[in-house]
Image (tube, rainbow, N blue to C red; front, side, top):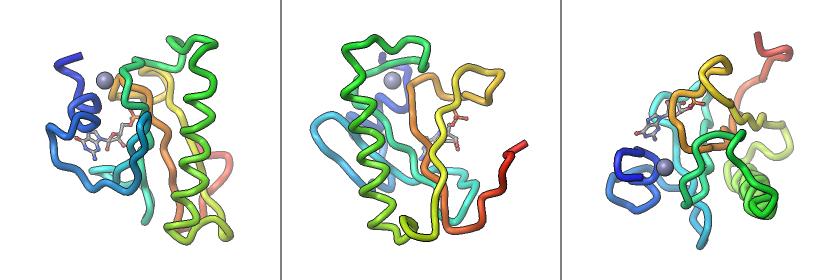
Length: 114
Ligand code: 5GP
Ligand code: ZN
């Protein structure tokens, strides 16, 4: 996926504020943060939306959530609390069509989100 910005970030073709990397996943700070801590956790493989996931990718998504857990500890938000969000398709606010898990924290997160 040559034109995908998150594929380019995963391939390190675009510099980014990296906070985590393993063989399958990379995580970096959001360019336009919605909270004091706003990190995006993405698979290195291109998957456009949550709707495109296949059962074989369940372990990959589990690893993304475990990466969020680990990063939350690193960032000091595990105990106060944090929010994780996948937006799926435009109606939910998805703007980059390479799945990403938002990790948000460092302030009180309201619920319902609106
Ligand atoms: P979505 O709206 O698709 O759920 O989230 C996409 C997120 O990616 C947005 O929060 C946006 O600020 C962030 N974003 C878009 N382009 C870039 C980029 O080039 N670098 C970084 N670090 N974040 C980006
Ligand atoms: Zn991609």
